[in-house]
Length: 545
Image 1 (cartoon, rainbow, N blue to C red):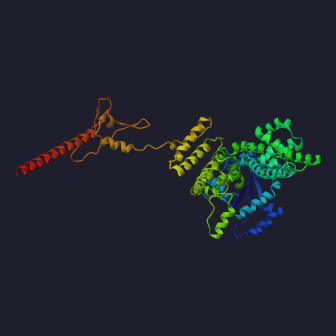
Image 2 (image 1 turned 90 degrees about the vertical axis):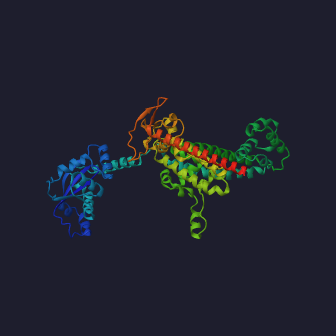
Image 3 (image 1 turned 30 degrees about the horizontal axis):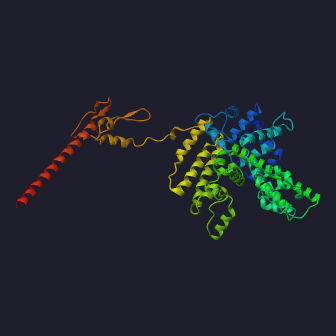
């Protein structure tokens, strides 16, 4: 049986014929060694046909189809023209060797061409890949490498679906830098306080804010030169006239030592650096908020930009965070405590990074674990919407935040929260109103319930027939008449529709039911009257005696 080899290169499809090879008894190691030598391999494998790609876009489309295990029309035509024709009712005298079993099965389903993929075929295809440039004539050196490089870049770009506005790596770097800046600004501010306190120790007790302290240290400079002339500048910095006057009074009676002009210059320069770092930290926070609104708007609306960015950075990417179950997201950041608890068989942690959310702090001590579990569930939903949705909206995050607020009220006051399906429908409506396109399935509409109950009520109605016995209308516009149970032997009535006083229609069965109940009521009333008369007669007899 002849063996053909299909090789998908960056420049086109190649079909090779391997003749004179007996697969039975072949040793894979021997084949692997013989593949390296072109003289031996060229005698066994020869080029049968070659179909070059028309353009780089065509090569990308063919490569995408092959990677997904699909056979394109171009590949089908190439195989049908190049391979021997298969006669109906007879077994083919050849087989096609492919590298991927998926595309082999698809080729067999469409064209009935027998395909195989095993170690022997893979070694032969490896030899074809190794010596492919020798088989193709008029191929310049370097052309194949250029085609492979261009196709590799375009294929990778198409798979990744690169979007500049949704690069979560920028968020990861920003939150790392923000945490580092917080530590640095705090440590530098403490160093400014220590340094300038040698000159003006009373200022540290009056001003608690680090940024304002650095600003004042630069503005005051030498405390001995501080007078009423600098009061407007102090008021502009602090925003409080009383504190400004207090600083001036404290400078007059300060116990600090004097510093040389060179020392004061160094203190002022260091205070300016701290102020610049603090301002850069504010700008970086604004940048992080804007990036989170582009990358994960729902997660940011639910739990906040900083906590959401920490979750993304700890998971590695937004995609990894979306793949995490809610139980993993709940303890994300508390891995050491988790494994220590598993090792010592103690209590596992209830929360990790989500502890920094305000919801956990607002919950009572006994409900913190429940609140963390519920919040992790909603964060998991929000991250998946942000990762796999093509639109950018905060409607889902706002609704999920409302759900968490309602759950807090439920734990504290016992107020029942709204259902998740109702909140998601409201979020989809809001997203549609904002101009975003949403594919709403018709199956998401609430099913029609209680129709059977309405029918049974119409049968056993005792009120006016215009309200209970009229037809039941359904949302689709169809009209359903109430059905009545009929006795097979006693009755064989035909269903007739009679007009009502209000112009509506009644069914016969409903009228029969109401008439029966009225008769039963009359019989019960007669029996009660008989019982009351007998009681009166007995009382009269007793009184006579």
